[in-house]
Image 1 (cartoon, helix red, strand yellow):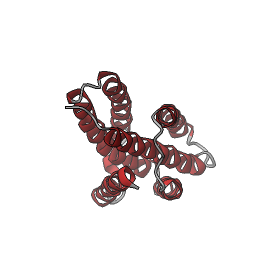
Image 2 (image 1 turned 60 degrees about the horizontal axis):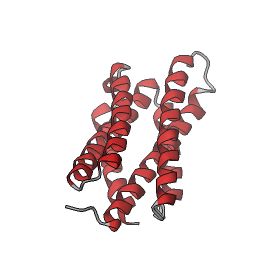
Image 3 (image 1 turned 60 degrees about the vertical axis):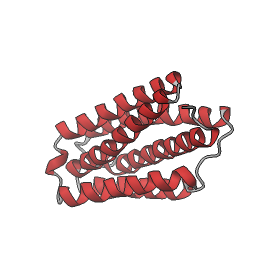
Image 4 (image 1 turned 90 degrees about the vertical axis):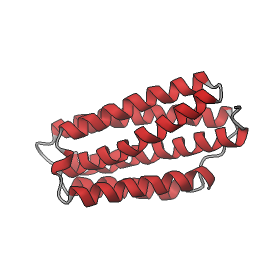
Length: 177
């Protein structure tokens, strides 16, 4: 099986959009926590994760240009939605911020896993390996969030389910639009 140019473009577009959204979620969370005393621990964690997400975004920026793939037309929406989600979860507290990370990364882990399998089957080992590396880093974010008490967030089942559903919708929309 060979990966079509169109399918490769969809993959790169949606992954770029996801990393763009993640960067903005962390920006929103940092906008709240950096202004609060005694939040040095979570600010450090968020800065580290945001830095990795920015590295992923930069890599996808380069891949979009190299492949002549347009980014999603929904970037302004993902910018605002990501920032708002970050601010909103941070205002609910540290556990809710971690619940946001855990929910997002759960969906992204699955998404990257599906892409790695598809790319491997299509004979694209280099891109598959790059996606697998990004997936590992996303899993590390999820594991940190879980260890920091994500499941103890207020209304965790509802919050987590809503964020996961939003991520799945964003993936579907960003592939095509």
